[in-house]
Image (cartoon, rainbow, N blue to C red; front, side, top):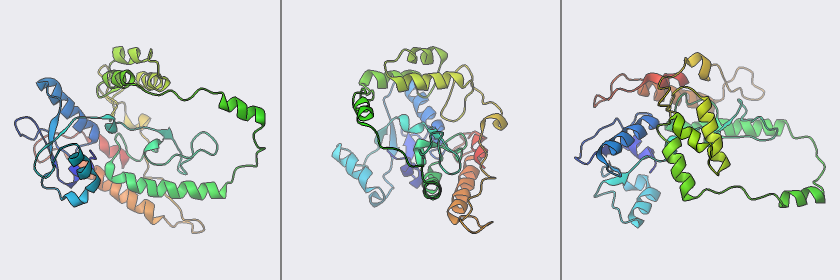
Length: 285
């Protein structure tokens, strides 16, 4: 279920029909609130009330729900946290370049620093516009050096490489249990013995990050380290139009405006229903 539905006005309810979280809080906080409630009650899901939402705004979601036997216009939809609350990706520069020559990363596959401690949903589309434009401009201006075609021996060696590891149910369950919403050193160390290389990599990185920030919540390190040592600040980064020194790309300007608006909203001390919101989202200003 896309969180855009909550942005449209859908609300989350416990078994008694009561709201229990500010639905527009950062996604890791919403996920933790849901998971805490499920742990306390033993329930498997909470209810998402989107009956006031125009089905025409989310035709694919409504069609999928109806195919599963659910009518979002008449009943609450059972939901629970999923991996979508996480974020991360390939570290890039302001031209979407990775550390591998010729490899660019844009969108949710990248780590740009534009979102502060959390991926801010309203910024994702603008981020893709800005960095896709910059990636294409850089790639066209810096074509790769000519390379000799691969030899028959090299192609044969590539063909003999094993296929990438696939995940099974056990791998997904262990990653959710030990690398999900709340991470402990015991659980992360168990993941180091996983059969899947990506699971082991996630665990190693999580063990190295001895703090809690955004979707990364360590039970043994519940506080964040100072922002000056861990956060990329983007306010000084301006996109310049080719051939027009000093002219800021209007796409970047709109993205920056949207980011500030989102951060301003998330930095309120109290939500309408009295749930405190942590002010860490100000890091993306």
